[in-house]
Structures are given as C-alpha cells and as structure tokens.
Amino acid sequence: MTEIAKQGSVAAAKEEVIEKAIKEESYVPSKEIRDLWKKVHSAMRGEFGEAVFRSWLKPLTLRACYHGALEVSVPTRFMRDWIQTHYAGRILEMCVEKDPNIKRFEVVVVQNAILADDESGEQSKKLKANENKKEEDPYNLSSPFDPRFSFEAFVVGKPNALAHAAARRVVESQNVPFNPLFLYGGVGLGKTHLMHAIGWAMKQHWPERRVMYMSAEKFMYQFVKALRTKDTMGFKDTFRSVDVLMIDDIQFMSGKESTQEEFFHTFNALVDLNKQIIISADKSPSDLLGLEERLRSRLAWGLVADIHPSTYELRLGIVQSKREQLQADIPDAVLEFLALKVTSNIRELEGALNRIVAHAEVAKQKVTLETTQEVLVDLLRAHDRRITIDEIQRKVAEHYNIRMADMHSPRRARNVARPRQVAMYLAKQLTARSLPEIGRKFGGRDHTTVMHAVRKIEELMEEDAQIAQDVEITRRALTG
Ligand code: ADP
Ligand code: MG
Image (cartoon, rainbow, N blue to C red; front, side):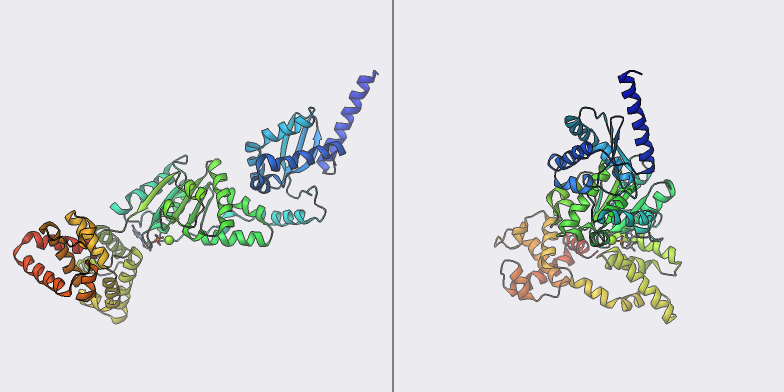
C-alpha cells in the first residue's frame, strides 16, 4: 500500500468512526475545529449585531466537522430554516476564511442538544423544558374564536366595507395578499369580530394553516412569562411557526419596549417567511403613540384599513340582523329608534337591544317604543350628554363650508353669522350648557346674543324650509 493510499484509508476509517459517533451523538470535534468555531461564533456578534446574535446565533452549537462539512445544531426546525435562509451563507464564508478545507455549513435540529460552553447545563435544561413543551400545539396558546363572530354575522356597510373586503381577501387568497393587514377603528366597531371571522374562515378554507390569535396583552403576558422561565426560545418558536398571526388591540403594547422589540422581531421573521399577519388597533399606525418608530412604520407597510364610525343605515342593518338571530318580536319603529339614538358604537347598540329584549321577557311585556325609551332612559341621557359644543361648531362649519374660526370671530357677514346662530341653537338643544357657557364658546359672546340666536333660528325654521333642512341635517349628523 502506498503512503497516500494508506493515509486515504486511514482518513476514510476515521470518517467512518466519526459518522458512527455522530449517529450515536458521542462525537466531540477536534480542538482545532472547536477553536475555529469559537472564533467564528463570537465574530458573528460583530457581523450580525447584538440583537440577531442573541435571538438566533447564540444557540448554535458545534456538533461535528467531517467530509468538509461543519455541522452545528439548533433546538428547533424553525430556527434551522431561518438560519439556513438568512445567515448560513455568510457563516460558511467566515469559516472558510479560517480553514479553507471547510466546504459546507450545515444546520441540524437536535432537540436535546447539550450545548457547547454550557458548563452549568442551564441551557440544556431550558431545551429539555422546551422539548417537553414541544408537543404543545400552538393552537393552545391561541385564544378561542367566538362562534358569534363569523363573516355571516357581520353586516357590511360603507363604514366597514374596506376592512371587510380586506379580511375576505386574506382568507380567500392562496398567497399573502398584503402584509400586514392593519385594521383600526374606535371601540366596538367590529375589529375583533372581523379577526375572529378570519379565524373561522381560515379553519374552513385552509385547515392545514396554523392560525394564532391573541390580544396584545396576552402576547405581552406570554413574553414576560417566557422571560421569567428563561424560555424565550420556546416563545419565539411557537410564535414564529404559525402561518397566520393575529394580534388584537396592539395599542396596549405602547410603552412596553422589550415586548415591542420581541414583537418586532417576530413580525419581521414572519413577514420574511411570507406568513400573514393581521393587527388591530384603535388608531392608525401613525397615531399610535408610544410605539417605536420602526415598528410603527413596519405596521403601515401592508394594507391599512380603517373602520369608520357607523352610519344610521349600518346600525339599522345590524339591529335587523340581530333581531333575526334572536328571533325576537320587535317592531321596526324600535329598531329605527335604536339605530337613530345609540350611535356611540355597535357594542352599545347590541347591548341596548339585548336589554329591551330581556326586559320584555322578564316583564312579560311586548317590546314597544315606550318600553324601549323607559328601559334605555339612562343610556339615552348619557348619550345626549356626550355631544360637545366643539363638535357642533365643527359640523355646522362643515355643512356651511365656512371656517371653524368663523364660529369665534366677530364677523357679522350673513354668510357666517347665520351658521353661527344655527350652531348656537343646536348647542342649546343638544347640550346641557347654559346660555353664558355657550356664549363663551362662541368667541366670548354675551348670553343675550345666544338667546337671540336661538329665537331667530326657531323662527326661521318655521318659515324657511332651507334653514329647517340645514338644522335637521346637522342635528342628524351629530346625533345619529
Ligand atoms: P372592537 O373589537 O372594534 O372593539 P367588536 O368586534 O368587539 O369591536 O364588536 C363589538 C360588538 O359589535 C360585537 O358583538 C360585534 O359582533 C358587533 N359588531 C360590530 N360590527 C358589526 C357588524 N358590522 N355586524 C354585526 N355585528 C357587529
Ligand atoms: Mg376588540
């Protein structure tokens, strides 16, 4: 046998031993390779930055080096895929710079890996804990969907048409149509309902997709819990292995910087993997205070769909559909009354309807306009109180196409004086403010000026159909 052949066969035998050892997981890489890896590993910190290093690269554990392949292990499949697509190329280059014999860089999943540099066994323990939890279905973390919140039960109108269409698109698309879908609107306007509807429909259309839904508060809670139990790896993996992630009421994350940071990374990870993200908030991304700028701008990347305050038509549609669901005997006039009066949000509107139905059942009475007014007296009063002089001024100015400043200015030209009187009249009608208080709000006018305005408008409404209509339109805009 020649020297070379001998060396070759010795090498081959050695490889064989190594491979066998790897299978049995007892292989310890040579001192040179371990030193090389140590250098490369710590160089990654400078190369990719502290945050990436801590999130993804720190857990990389040298496993073997054979056939020119440097093999490292990670605890989860998700991490492996992520590292392969994002960092493996550069890491290989870094290894080759130190040892040109290295030809490949491989990442394998080893769930109970004993991590290098883990004298205390701390990380191994964590991984063991992870592994036990591995069987935990991500669905378990997801909050359940309310059966009432389906697409079928969602009444579509102008104020929510865009949000609804976008939600449908997300469900019906093979791919991710926009990312994220950002739904925003005031309280009780149907954001949560739409998200649950997406959840239900996803289960139906794409049963294989993993959908996770939770409030931002729960996300924060889970994150803090993970920190406390030192299980952030499991946390990351659970969240980052879903196909559709929905986080409700993200405004609650404001100010919680570490959670935002974590969410930001999760967000980017999922977007990069082309997974669908759906976010809701009570404000637009640009108005969300206390959110870090980069997170805010990311949130505005996809489709931002706002749900506007409801219109009379939409509210009527909703109470009609609700009547059908309840199979309750409610006169149309009552529904119209509710749609006209309970304008704050849909939740309150539903609450009002439920109350009158419950009252009718208990009192063994039919639902009528009278019983409705009686039952809802506090709610209606509270609602009336909510209209402010500011709002009235703005609406009237809008209607007459004059400037808001004209409400306060001393100008007496008819084209601004008349609208100002209309606004004073409505302020008297729709708020509990006294005449002097109203006067003050109109550029410090005397209460007699206000009184005069109220009388004048009352008069004019009798004789001038145009004025009567103007007043009616603005009153409706303000109350219903
Ligand atoms: P948000 O999350 O925006 O605060 P929700 O989704 O919880 O509001 O909605 C409040 C209530 O109003 C829910 O009971 C919901 O079913 C109902 N609702 C809101 N919008 C609609 C709609 N367009 N059609 C039917 N019900 C609606
Ligand atoms: Mg909600």
